[in-house]
Length: 533
Image (cartoon, rainbow, N blue to C red):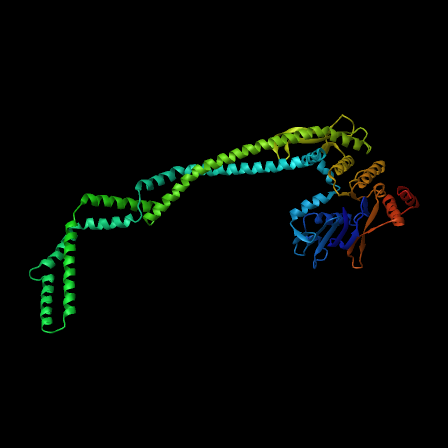
């Protein structure tokens, strides 16, 4: 229940702070006094759209705060248009504020009766009456999960189709590289071998030249070193210290002998092999062509690319397995949705006649004695967020003749009465702590207005009802009464305020509602009668 409302710097309201009692709270005031401003501030507090235009003084924040029995909600709009929301001084998102607000206050504006022609509203009324809240939430969660699963399956199918288009080319590339049997570093080795095979004759000649240098009778390196060694030995015997030189010359001679032997061995291995050269040439050409074709710089890069192709090919297998899993999940969710939708449908069809009769009886009490009201539940062509049903409110104020969809045949006054009947019924089933009516009695007067007042009073016995009204028959039934006034400053600026009226002040306000600004003695007496004074 709303216990206190504080508004600062909102539209025509500079500062407002009121304690709100329980039961039926009446708010009245002259046309244009600012009753709708109060409603707008409350709507803002419950998650409505923030608009910088509502800020009265652009140099400070607009603040709307409401205290409920166990919670405090505050909405702040800065001059820049930025909006912040708080619950018990803790910041919350706008979505969180809306969810909380919808469980605390139900606002019914003077145009809300237009909802009566909306099928979603009609279904929600029936579900509320039938107690389908938990079942509907379970169905909706499962249905949305099903839609997400279907979207995932569609995405997979798109990806699989795109993959299948390029799979043949991927396989072709992979097979080319697989057939090549590439080995890391082989290109460099092949190029070395190719160079030797291509120049075998010249290599052999050069080896021969080197060998000849060792065997030349005119000048032999080995023979010369031997002679140098003999000379150094003689010097040694003559007492000259040549031991180290002798050893170095001997080491050189031995090393040269090894070189000669190695040259001979290598020379024997040099063989002209055109067949092998052709094989090597072809291999190098193949690798080079593969590098060019796939835009790679080495055998190693080609092998890495081949591995990536193998992974892509394996994805095809994963695609298939994943699709089978997702498809099975979709089918399971589809079946679960059908089962829950069937339960909803059965519950709705069972509750529809009872709801029809409840609203019909309530409407009859508001002077529609020949009213026909039926809730018709049909089967929808496709399953949706509401399940697999269509729901229509059928109405006639003149018996069975001319029964049509409510939104297409009821007058404004009839719509107001039907909506009040529905709100009164839902209030009993939902346990909504606070209900706000904004001139729900538009289009009615006289005894009908009085009976609507009685119904509103009855609702106020079990919950807090805040009724903005222009009808004295309704206003007089409230357990408390507030009047909205607009005043003007000398510079022409307007300010809206609200205050509670009691005693003579309340009598005068009811009399004003009866006769206008020119209060008459009769209006005052009638006001006292309405107030049972």
